[in-house]
Length: 451
Ligand code: UD1
Image 1 (cartoon, protein in one colour):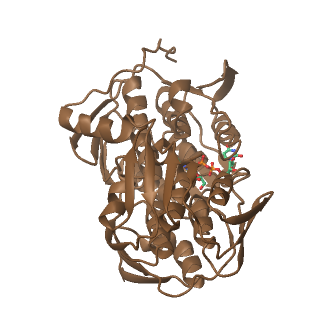
Image 2 (spheres, helix red, strand yellow; image 1 turned 90 degrees about the vertical axis):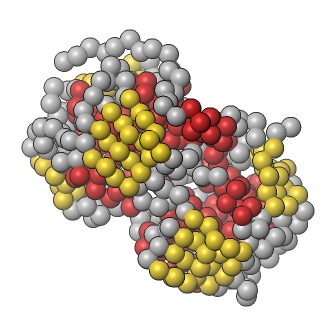
Image 3 (spheres, protein in one colour; image 1 turned 45 degrees about the vertical axis):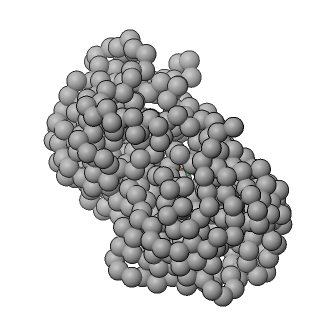
């Protein structure tokens, strides 16, 4: 087995096209002090196109570590997490090129370091997605253990148990997980809890393991399916794709592949709610309505008019009342936790009271107290928020605490009377591609500024 290399400092991004690098850096990286100023009350009208899904792009980028041939990914969103994953891959020795906007070509033929360091894991938990592929292909990985975060503890025990069941030896040294194996061996793994990145990590580990692995109670999120499709294109043998039981017949080697990332279902859902709360008329294009069926159903029950224009386009309109409806977050295909905050914002404007139950993360209501500063009436009790609707929101200074909370505050600001200032919008830049530009184009008054 190879020994761990001594890691260099995080390298600057190597780029063939400096203009694109500058674009990236100016739009996505240099924004830690940025704020949004929103003047509420504008009706949104027009067309918004949806970017590629960050949560699919990240595991697909990590999957490039599984082969020495090129992996080309199209439809990547311009968001900070993608830059962080790129830096992680480059730091390990990958050559990453951007032949055109939204496309990356990743060459992992010359990996020298097998580590995801704390500096990157602390800014993006999805760095742990390097673990499965590194152990599978190189027999070693060192990944900083992610701590708790704004929405809960978020352990990775199920990733580690799964790897152990495939024969890896796991140690915890100085806050880092060190995993080693000669060659992983297939096994039957039953997840105690549905875990999205846990399923993705195990899938990427099992594709190069000796023998057959069965993953039961696997996550069925569209992003997991997208990764499985890429892996099969690379020569993996995964069956049961899209179901909660995945069977993976290990192969000794994977090849390169080209793949287009699916549209971001959470971005699409966020624009549906933005259209609804502003009583607007928005056409949402380049999305996959099937991936947000639970969100469409719930919004429709609440009185939002959503029309399916085609397999890739929706129209949202709301002239009448929004009626309070309860939701409970659950794994796919049920209502996604990543849409909970945005839906909660909508419920502040509904007729009646709604109960929002959060079943995935234990601390995911930080947006509620910010919305209360804007005049919303919300009571949080354990994993439930009770929203008494129909209260006029008024602009205020609010703080974004995490990615989806930021999106919900933007939605609340679009509805509020007067000016809303949202601080720490770097959270939103992790996962939304040019959100303020897209909103401005359809009539919102929103600008990015620094004091
Ligand atoms: C992914 C998504 C995130 C989404 C979440 C739930 C990415 C990059 N992020 O996060 O946007 O909100 O799915 O849909 O795809 N758990 C454990 N032990 C583990 C793993 C998870 O107890 O080893 C728990 C978590 O604390 C949580 C639940 O399982 O309560 C689901 O988490 P999980 O699906 O793993 O979330 P992520 O994959 O981190």
